[in-house]
Length: 111
Length: 115
Image (cartoon, rainbow over all chains, first blue to last red; front, side, top):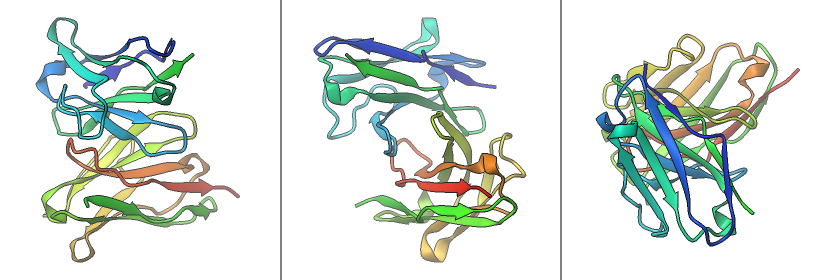
């Protein structure tokens, strides 16, 4: 069965760039679109990237998504970090039965 | 505006039953599936299952099959998640979401199960 693995945490200073990985196992990451969600404490998740690399309206262009078939991974990159970016980030995709699959989440700390 | 609005928080005792709701508006409700997602305190997101309102087809995660029931009422554009016998380990926030890549989620329903 298809699984997604994320690093537990990542940290960086304001203004820097970070990349969060989401590695697939039990299938190809490229078989289905990947979404990225941002979740702040006490709030519902908000989508920041859909369909691998598309940004919803209202999401700053500091957020970008990509797929790398060679590493079977999806990546979320946030440039020009701001303190407001501090949150948990989850990748999400689908398995063969159209079920949702979530990564375990990555806690971003902006120091 | 496309939105999903969930029912209010619930406090229940172990062994009690519960049905929480998720009402869609601003779009063709029967055209999109509804997923339910659990978030245990301090933990990540877990997909529980989904329902297609057009035909009530359901697909459950093996982790939740037999523990919960997902249903829908097309006439009120509402999806439901229910338990017949709650356990303390069901204490969590439950989110409904449109089963697509739109990022349309409800605000979450906190369920507390405690004696």
